[in-house]
Image 1 (spheres, helix red, strand yellow):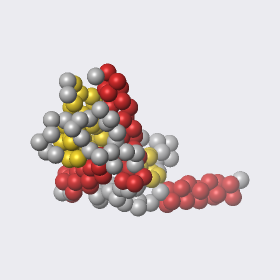
Image 2 (cartoon, rainbow, N blue to C red):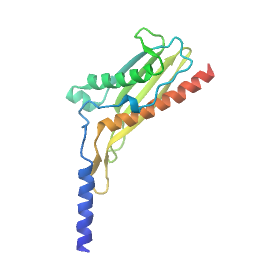
Image 3 (tube, one colour):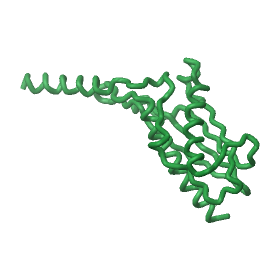
Image 4 (spheres, rainbow, N blue to C red):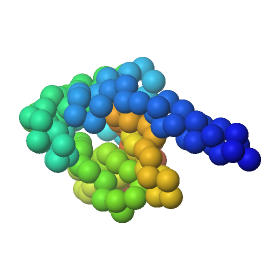
Length: 175
């Protein structure tokens, strides 16, 4: 029985150590735009959009890289739009606004990133939200797992783009 207890403790330590941070939450995420879906807005004419990304995450404001993170997300979204032949133009009437923020949840669950997009199109608008976690806390044993902020942004952006595409399709069919 003593060996079983030692094995369980060793196993828990191994799980905790295997979740070491690859890219920490204070760093600018590394995101592969090629691994993300393409933003499709079939009825968007002309094929231009104004894109604005803001970062309100507390940790990024504390370390002073809010703008760098917002620029990275903006570049990834611009690449996705470009794949659908949608150009970025600050003067465009159609506007896609993305806000990065902390996902509010209980202290025991971990750390998450929330992305909220609002798209203003002719005659209306729609909003979508997505979140993804980069660190999970075990409320029973108190250890944490995970920690790669890049994977959290990658997953959050994938979900956000899928939600944008779903809403854009509904919007296209409505108008």
